[in-house]
Length: 213
Ligand SMILES: C[S@@+](CC[C@H](N)C(=O)[O-])C[C@H]1O[C@@H](n2cnc3c(N)ncnc32)[C@H](O)[C@@H]1O
Image (cartoon, rainbow, N blue to C red):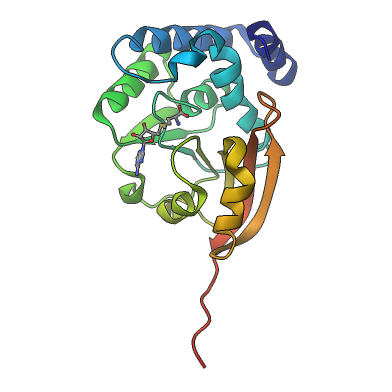
């Protein structure tokens, strides 16, 4: 997907208002400027930010369209991917969880610059974030699936929709997690890379271990 195709895809799927385009443009510019100080995205993806990061994040909204009331939590947000993109394109409260100080500061600066009144940051580890009934949980490049589910159990309930971009490893990670986790797990193809996939899961809970005898 070229950068022009990425913008066209956004327009076709979200009917993006002018104000949202402005926010996304501003975010891309803040992200690229901050790259001089910290490594927020892979250097090789710099010329492809709209396809590799903005559309890659925005597509998650399509998998969470029928989510109920409640916040969207984005785990290990880093530079705000997908958190800032989702908060820019939706009115739903969006909480980004990030443990690294410089990234927390960057996220708070972006929220203020873009005027994102629906977005906030929990600056700390996912494991100690306050218990929440999240309507949606996203996590991109945060942790392998078993660890991801374990660390965020207290942020979910049976209605939570999990939208988890997993690159080329989706099927393997799912197989590793399967013995310990039950739920409705689907693997969806990413629009930005035919070889990459997104795990979409509902009704996720740990498998009860059978007692002996
Ligand atoms: C590889 S980066 C991915 C960032 C972003 N989601 C993206 O796709 O560009 C992983 C991020 O998760 C954060 N992280 C890792 N473990 C964490 C934890 N247990 N709690 C909170 N943040 C964590 C790291 O500080 C880092 O910013």
